[in-house]
Length: 195
Image (cartoon, rainbow, N blue to C red):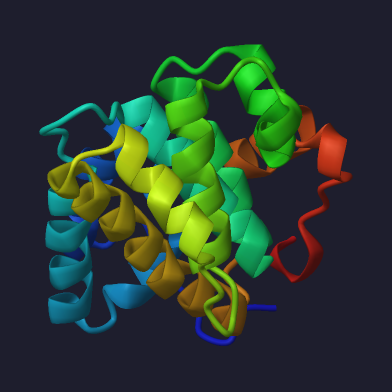
């Protein structure tokens, strides 16, 4: 049971939220409907989300969602795991990448540059943070400083979302739950408290 009940999707105050999230997820997340109880929080989150997910360098929309999945998987937030894997699929990820991102180190579906970024996301998402010096060096081999800022933006954004949704026990939407069940069999994904 969620800590706080989201605002009803039919509420007139959520019209723009629904429009924005229909592109990325196909629905407006319950997390944002909960944030909307204080509209400035929802507004600030959406603006940060848009800024972080905007692409300027080598990072694609699909890869940013896979970075977000690794961050969320490390943090253990099942709500965000389901959302990020769904968003990666909607942004064109292949089944091989989606089904094996949790084991990226051993998969040929990822380039060395992607593996360096995913390793960084994994280590940067630990509590306490534990980024190895070698991981930082590998990151700089493949990515510019500007790209690293984009990578870190994804990790930080999902640090917020992982904490928000795990503490709030946000209820998963049906489509996100289905994506988690279908695409995350390799980690024996279950919705847990988000059911």
